[in-house]
Image 1: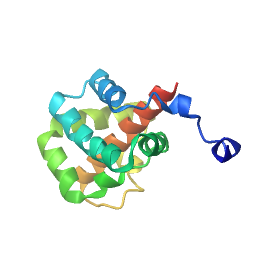
Image 2: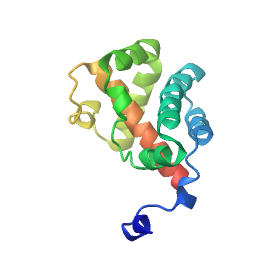
Image 3: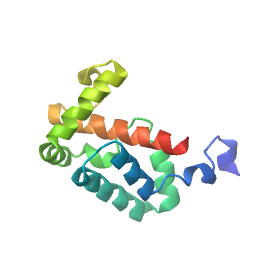
Length: 136
């Protein structure tokens, strides 16, 4: 009852946020299997740690914020090194979609490493896109 008073989304709407649906959306976006698997492992760990309802609320609330798990520089560099072509392709797409350079889009990110910033930009933007898509 309290959640409804404060404008939280109903359980019914959040029910579309499932690990399978997230994975399917990443596949639809053209991400390769290895990249999807790496992201899904991190999301599955969060799901298992916090449970379904808390995971759904967290995913819904991303709103172009970076999931904490990707603040780790070593994790981001590893992702970039394994998937640099995909990351660079996505950065170019985001620049075209937003009409903003990736440097402007990452001004709020604390890391100064370009590889880390690009990975963080792609992950936060695309996961937020998926969240919005699943809720519509």
